[in-house]
Image (cartoon, rainbow, N blue to C red; front, side, top):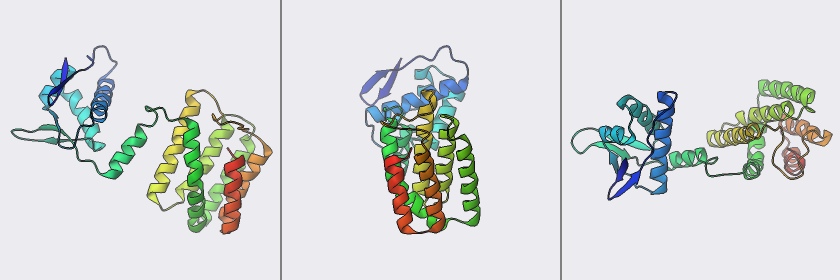
Length: 245
């Protein structure tokens, strides 16, 4: 079975025994994205008609339709009707390409250490925004989360999850949608990595998950947000970066 790309042909997997249509559709999505990325297919490249793709992948038209809906939602492909129409590589905006690259991080082998380093770099902007824009309700939520964090701090799994709940809530205060979205997705990536390893600890050298100093640092982060004092923010962020997590 081949997948035509201009003058190129490529062998594609035959989807046989799967548990449901969604599993097949997800596999088709992954395969089409992989081909576009691997061969750097340009915007406007014709992938084929829906009928051709259904035949080449050996799947039902309804299953292909589900895969194409996902790909259109991601801005990967576009469908053009009429003679000469079919499925084409979309002209993605820079933001869509960036978002798609983030989705590919795990597949490309980004380590949790690399993600934590980026998250550390974003902390200053996140805490600054939280201090500038926090409301009384935000502070009540942060205080409640600190109480919860203190109660589970010495549990290696629950303590870490609650820690990230606190960081998520801080990030959610920011009105900067780009900063907020990237920060929250990086936290999700780190937590997902910890769950895959069935561990409550991060793959970070020297990481001590339940030291009293780390708990104090998180208290100080919340107090710096409450105070809106730039110097307290700076000190808390530096200590969090070097001693935290």
